[in-house]
Structure formats: C-alpha cells, structure tokens
Length: 77
Image (cartoon, rainbow, N blue to C red):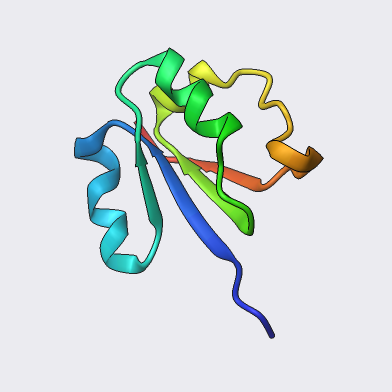
C-alpha cells in the first residue's frame, strides 16, 4: 500500500504542529492566500487538512491544478 501525501492549509498557529506528523504545512492567514495556496498545491497531495477559516475561504473547493480533487478534512473549531 502506498501512503499518500498530506498538506495542511490555514493559520500558522493551527497548522504548524502538523509538520511534526509529516504534513506539508502551507500557512495562509487570509482568504486570498488560502485560495492562492490551494491553486498552487504541489503535485501528489492526496489529503488536505483545512482550518475552519481556510475551509470557509474555499467554500466551493475548486479542483486543484490538473483537475485533481484531493480529499479534504476540516479541523474542529
């Protein structure tokens, strides 16, 4: 079984610790940055963990580059 790559998008204070678990941490403190980071997701990301604010900024969750739609999970508030 191949393990997929995980990214976390959101405020630094909420996502920084996920780097210890091997996630690619993509800090985005505002909605515009969240949308830019989402558009520029690295290839091979299979799961994106979002903070509640990041999830709100991506309400429609457009496809990532190449049409890929990674699985998403939203942290509790």
